[in-house]
Image (cartoon, rainbow, N blue to C red; front, side, top):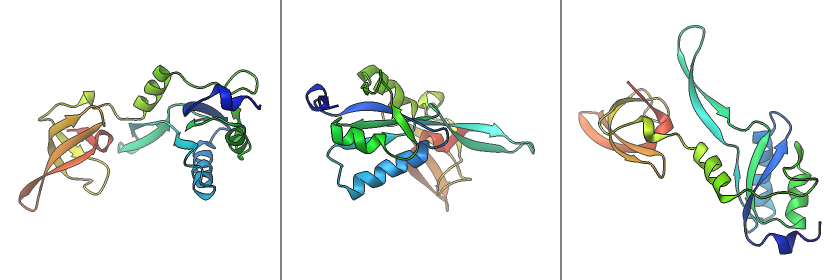
Length: 179
């Protein structure tokens, strides 16, 4: 494995395969290792891409469910070296890096955009002026009207009426649903 350093200049995204159901545990372990071993200069981001969907239970009540987009995979932005490969590869629940043989294969820029964009709730479903209900966060149960939409960040600004006053509140688009 000694030739990682010359082949991988700079941070790139890699995919780690895990046992089913271990994605969040592996992510948490990596984040703890980064903090305890001071690896923030070589391991930058750890993602388990999810999407929030609304389901209806047997009683007819709507419920938000967070589903993994890529079950059994964790995405890591890191500088690949012998040390980082070894640290990640031997975490409990990790079966290996995605790539030919034991050789990790970095993602292309297009693949990274598709994956990181998948984690954000699409704001395309909303328009300025839409009446919405807030379904997550401190204002759960309140209603409001969308006044701004930021496609880059996936956030919306909702005008919420509370205590006789209107106030703008910025939030992730996954925290609201159309009336």
